[in-house]
Length: 415
Image 1 (cartoon, rainbow, N blue to C red):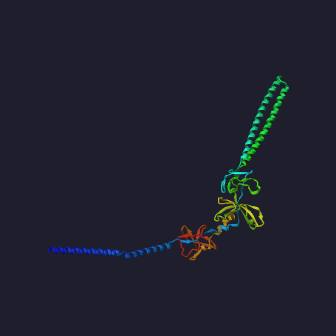
Image 2 (spheres, rainbow, N blue to C red):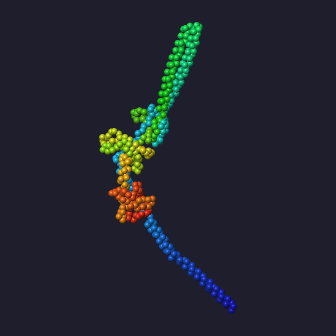
Image 3 (tube, rainbow, N blue to C red):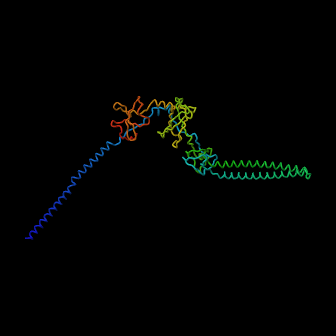
């Protein structure tokens, strides 16, 4: 009987264990089914977050706006009495050549090089010239030696004449002896003078030979920039043009960039308004945003009958390597400074009409300050802003109704 009870207890324990195992299997099944509802919920949450972030960015993104600059009413074309076009010209421009005919053995520059005054640019074949110079130097040395010989002979004859005079005074020699001694002095003096003249001639020949030799070296006549290279090693150059076109008349062109100025053609009807010393603004066609302060040098007293214009020379008050001869230039001749300031003070500020709008009965503009706009009330006098805006400030063009004070903006690129 005891064995049967023990067996029943064992069966009960086994049943309990089997029941616990079934509970764990159910939990595992529930965990396997859990992602079926968790994944869609997670996706919905992510979509909501992304949509909210995109909406926030769209509402708070910087607004792209077009801007323009407010100008004093007296600036720009308002100050210009006359406008004219012309070109940059160099007053010092030279075609560098040789003074003798010869063959180039060296060319020591290239187009665009900056050179200083006296710098060697090229050399010719100087063999014959060097030989002539050496011969001239030898002749000069020989002539100088003959001068020294004649001088020594003269000194000796002078000493002999002195002794002969002393002996003649003592009655020891005849008077004829003293006369012969004096005659020898005169002859030697004349010989010395002749030798000195010959030495001077030899020296002059040596100088001439040196000059001819130096002609074989081409040097820069002034400091500037080489703008063209016209000859190469091996070519024959000459100061004179030769037939056939095989001889170069120059090795390059040199321009003094500090001598660049403007020459413009002013209409005859407007030339009366131009005066020497008058203030100007020069704008190069290649750099339209660069205004170069200038002034009138002189009015050339001649007219072009075909164009009905008078040429005016204008000096540039700023120098820059971007200035190149023959560049196109537009020159604005300005009113005197005192009149310009008075006119600007009376005229206020001008802006594009699209920048001024009306809100709540007030005339306003939106001024760009760093990365945001500031609403500014302005007072108008016709098309001019006489209060509320300063020259040089940037204003928003055609501001939209949604634009308000403090909104972040970004200037849109101009087209």
